Length: 232
Ligand SMILES: [Ca+2]
Ligand SMILES: [Ca+2]
Image (cartoon, rainbow, N blue to C red):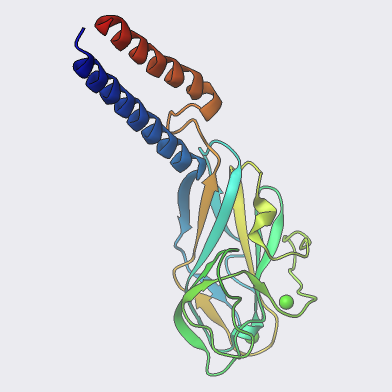
């Protein structure tokens, strides 16, 4: 028996085994972050001087997703309005709702071409006393007693998008936009987007870790056994 050769071979198999384990662990870690998909309704949402927007609501139909929701973010595209404090926005999902924008910005002279990404993990809320600018913000509901006329459901009270966590994302999502003060209107010129991350593990075809650990460890053990036998 060539001990030198055996030792080299053993080390090589060990390194390969380690590489395979590391690779699989990284793949599984990536999978744990979920599957992300974006749905868009690019049609203009026209905001009158006062009252419900048109259309009311603006809908996005979500279909074909597996698993439950880990995270939701919303993008409101290209806002123009002469006094943004007038705007209230209620997002309604297949189960649950949240007032994601209300009474923000300091009003005149208004904004145009402002795109708002709403994400619970953003660093800041939308401003109360300065003009809105394009950016990523936490959903922001300033003040209280926002009224969303029929057919909107009663707001649940919260503004965080985590209200949708854990639910089946498939179904109709609705954006109810209202202008609650006379004078000054506008529009979300390019509509809105919904980005949904689910805990789907089937789409990528990767079994969950407990299912996978035993076969992987068995294969590595077998590789060691075969090498030992060959060199004894
Ligand atoms: Ca409010
Ligand atoms: Ca108004």
